[in-house]
Image 1: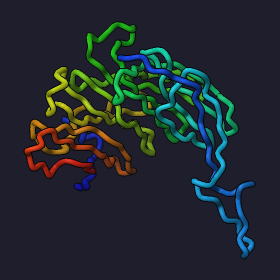
Image 2: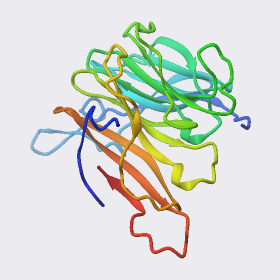
Image 3: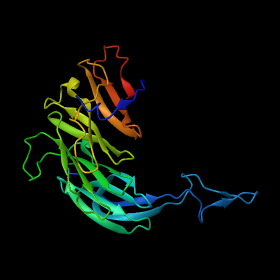
Image 4: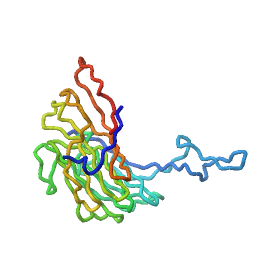
Length: 269
């Protein structure tokens, strides 16, 4: 496993029907409360998450949650799939389970890699990345897919400067989205060519924006190394750090069983 940091933004280089059911969020409190146990010293001992009793809040019918992010000060934002093929939901839930706002946004559920991702910035702005096969007017991209990044303010209104679109290759899918302490937004995903059998075209990409949607560089491939044509390198997670960079993970998959490929597995940059 390799471990290396990437500085940003300089690192930005250069269907089938799915049966959906009622969706819910479970909140597990591990900081004391009525389920806490007292020790013989009189101190309160918090139960581990596996033993804590969760509170369950409904998100409605015909929904499939795919990603959640904690909201500053309490509550959570969830995104996921609806029964419509080209639509996702974005829902903000208060700490007591009340739905504060519920929005629909453009997204697609054809591929598992295209599931929506969400993060919340330090000021409470919500950022969502999804894969879509249509442009902003709903017109087909003729089989290609782009990553659509949008943002909602704490009241659930679409923010000025958004949405933004990412197209590094013919097909582009989000894997992770995150913000730093300045609320710059980093979108990490995988792109590939229109030839799904071209293993060497599956490569991670990185894009970055200010909180207002201004690009911090041209989105481009992340140099994880390895040009072996029988490898696919798929984006994983991202963790920004305060000095302007991020840790990235990627999964390297070898498709030639006769090849002694020591580069496969999970890597960290």
